[in-house]
Image (cartoon, rainbow, N blue to C red):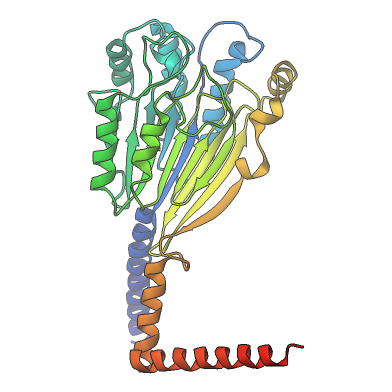
Length: 362
């Protein structure tokens, strides 16, 4: 009889613990966005150039897919443009054949190479036919994968430009402003191929209206992270509540992609960046020897593996200080009159010291 009651009590305890654990697990997963950012895969059958290991583009993506599949608990994989080296049906088919082995859903922004040979609508139709997660009618879109987050994907590719420069349409700038305005209570992830803050200066690769985009971003105070590719370089820049992330190309040294984990706590946001390079060492070394300024593309250690926090209520902010003073008054029951009197006494003491010091001066 005692054993029967004991078993019943143990069962009840386990059920309670399991339910509590599941609740907290769900809550934590909802406040955490865990994803891979990979850029400039340039899938093609072309031979290598001095800058890109195009002949190994498929092998590099195959290796990346295998490495990503070894990571547990990812929410999705985000490709930030130049999925293919030229926009042909064959290259897109090869790209999605390799992605068919990936066990996570994918999102993508478009790069300038993704429309090189096809009209935008044609390329969009191909992507939608292969990717069931691409349910959007345009090459830019927004979604909320979790209640704490809003993802905004932009398309800065201008086919009329003779260079690899990009430009956001007025329609997209308004779209960006509207999305940010309506999601000020969320952590916002913005993805596009062309960075609005360059990892290095390039007159033929820049976002021509980067200032207009950045002017919109700085209007808002919630945590914002902007991820991009295009420059084939590693760089992380922090400007207050905004984090700008440039990720290297998979086909150019250092042939890497990022594991990004964002956790949205009540008072702060934690950013964790991991850097994963290809396991095709011979391909990487051969490309390293052919590219110019490979160290600039590789970036510093802080541009690769990095963890930092953004505090929503920074101790130096006026609002935060005002709240602390209010709390101090409440806890000590000190009145404003008492503080004023105390400050007056301090002023008198300071004046007395100055007077004394002046009189003692020879």
